[in-house]
Image (cartoon, rainbow, N blue to C red):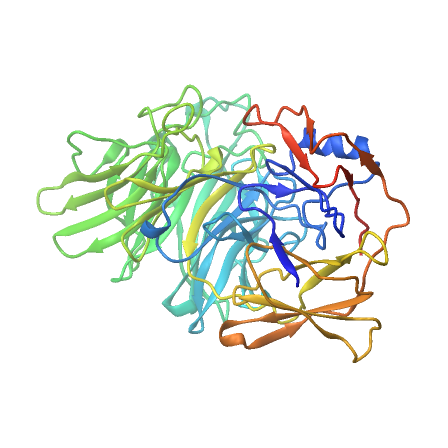
Length: 564
């Protein structure tokens, strides 16, 4: 009779099992570096988080709040950069990895990773680019449910790369909105640049036809908003002298298109939201900033991101935005960052704050994030937040109560420009399940590790094993439940050869792995201890816990990995 063990949701095992009657389990908080050093020093082997996919080093979600009955349906989509492996990732709400997209953008970073509709089906969209100071240079990417790139979308001008701050499909994927930053020369004498023309970043956005690449609409900040409307003053020792250091006076960071065809944009450095006419490009109204169309009794926002249409008619508009209220240590508005819903009365020109949502409590109080961030309205009216540079993500009830909260990648201090939640069906049809099989000796029980990167429809695993790699493989484990990214299945005896079959709903087979020979190590490091538990005095990062190595028979083996 086989047994099944799964990598823990809140902890990650960082050594293999010593198969047979002696099965050692070493756990720590997310492969803690101190614990890893202990293992390496003790065994002279490198200990991987994942047995059969050692190349995957995904961020760990440290879940602080989890109320599953109150959550919306869907997976979590983040794209950390400044991380051990920067790239797009999908997680479930238990914190288990679903898909690692490390490498899909080559050496570029990934931003704004989310589910989008393209040609009538759900796809994955993101911007792939290289960051340059406050913006990036790259292009949009569309991937299908098999994680294949089916379309790259470029700005409609030769030599003009798009920017990270927006890549958004419209009209069922017929068109795309994207931001662009273009350095331009301008007379900046009144701002302190006296040695010839200075350099300014022109914040642009375009709407393009995805199929033809045709430019449908283009808007430039310098044609409508002069630099003196900004709050980010020119520091001539750092900005404005060259094209590489062009003054970012406007800083466009979101674009949304309303049902009437007009655009809503956010400009971080003018502290302003603008409605832009799709017919003329003129500014129809401004909210906040130095020339606001509306009075704002009792509230304000600053250094904001992610402005979105919620409702719009002739007399009223409702918008949402992520209010950073902070740009740096010295540039601070409100004490905390928040999500805001604002109603605009076009008859009275009064803006009203309808709702404000703060982050979940942390060890330092509510979050104040100086860059990035977003708020997503979910189908069940819950709100999902990415807290930008703070690497926190959370889901809230409509009244603001947090019902899910996680922190990721604390060791690397990564950023994810935005974070999203959405239903998703992934079928990595061009790949097969990845397996690794291990036996301590040729008479010990075989342990099988299996995962399938990106597969969302797998319910269980069938294991077939035998004495040879031919057709004589027999069923050795039936419907071992899938639980988390990597499942560990302990068979009832030693098998020299194994293969695994992915099983979906209603016991339908999906796909088989390759047939793999069980690995039997040539060297074992065996520790003998005189008690049931060996306690290693390791200071883990978030607590004073100890790493416990448990063995039921005093003798156990810590066995390192070999890469396939």
